[in-house]
Image 1 (cartoon, rainbow, N blue to C red):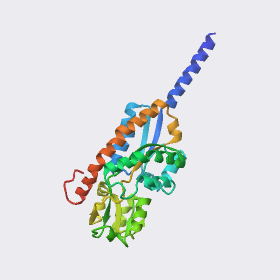
Image 2: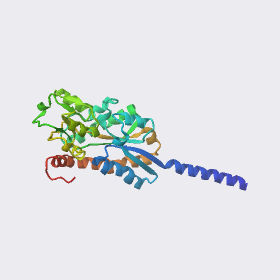
Image 3: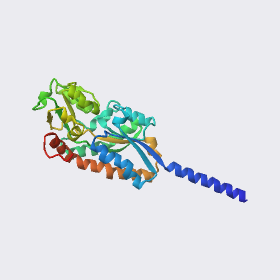
Image 4: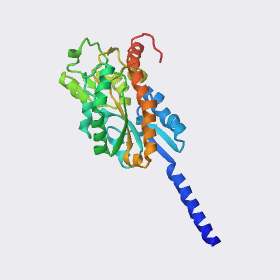
Length: 289
């Protein structure tokens, strides 16, 4: 009888320990561009500090798009294959594999941040469905970069001056927009742009005002056109559906609540300010960065 009791206790202990190991999760996270405030102030701190403070069994190894060197939708495809658990990437980067996402950020549709927020709220269910269908991924957040403006090597006074120029577009929809203006849209990764501008591979390039300043675009261009022609270049945060379903319902609710509180909401709050700060920094105004 004692042996039976010992056996039952041993098996119970094994199951208990196994359960504790299952609940502990090491997440492989790909953040957006590591030189920008979205990554430095929100994405990395969320996974390495904010989330573990509430759910200490969750640990994260955080890298960035620049480090993994996967272009376009490849990073989400790799997540679907189990290489990563969470990906932060620009929605427009993956439109080629998920055309529905193009509707999230149409150029010049929402020039003000309040308008942009309404568009995102209305389109969020569509984005969630597209990510689930096309990448087997769970949408966790949609956050804007500063308004997308035009950096040019030579002076421009309006959109008509873009005709005939080669322009690095921030994504597919922006490329279609500049093509309609008579320019040629060029696909380049964010990290390739400064050198391409310096060498004249492109005449102009589109990105967020503060993003461009932080990445040194102002050092290789002479003019910035502050009209937000390229939308807001939304960063989508997605988790592998397999990883998402490995969490219990309480953990899922906590993750969603925490990411809204510590990543999505504050990112929206600083975007309007950073748009103007980027312009100020580029044009010799007061610059806090």
